[in-house]
Image (cartoon, rainbow, N blue to C red; front, top):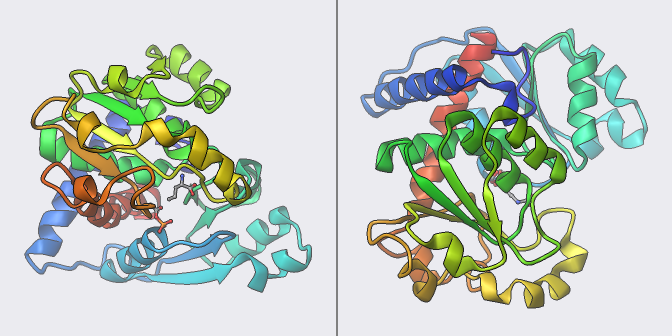
Length: 300
Ligand code: CP
Ligand code: NVA
């Protein structure tokens, strides 16, 4: 495993499988009330340039469950907000903490942090990728379906979609993506997936994408940083809602996933997110277990 986790493609197939096994073990221990100080005297700096519920809380609890400590650092409360460079910030934090997790607007910033840091850097979401989310999602898919699935991505070809494309290429599962024209996934990610050996199918017809799908995945139509395009996007994405009509076209035991937060009534209906196919809260819980495994692999 590489020193940092910036892109899902920093991980090999065996790295991912090992992280998932470790996450399963840690999840089982926690369910049985077993807490071990795997990360005693270790600390994690968590830099947030954008809001977060799951990433912030799951990383913080992960560190405290394992006997370590996490520091929540808002970008604007750090001297970063007054112009201190990302590189200098990385050098200084490396003198204090065991690892840095960062949620940034621009992917280059988390790359720059990693380039200047002497300790592991974890991407807690950028405009390009969300690798921690996908590790939790793979854990969820493994628990519910095994990893030999067809996954249909419906909606925006965004950061979460990009990391899932890389997971599909590395692990070799089928992925079919339905996006409105002009909202396809990032070209560099598609090229990377092709180089790894598996490109997803891309269509603009959501009904075609969900045919024979074991997993349907959707996310917001306007990610953080695209809020100003929201009204326009609501119109463009209208046909890409995950609703009863769409879910009925997939396998009867299809699971429906969403990384959350959801805009209920937009990309997904209440009926589906609260219905029998939905696994969204298991997914959210698995952020904790998967990230513990990542932390142990990087700084344990
Ligand atoms: N899914 C996810 O990363 O959620 P937060 O934005 O709440 O961290
Ligand atoms: N694609 C969403 C994911 C939020 C966890 C965003 O970037 O806002």
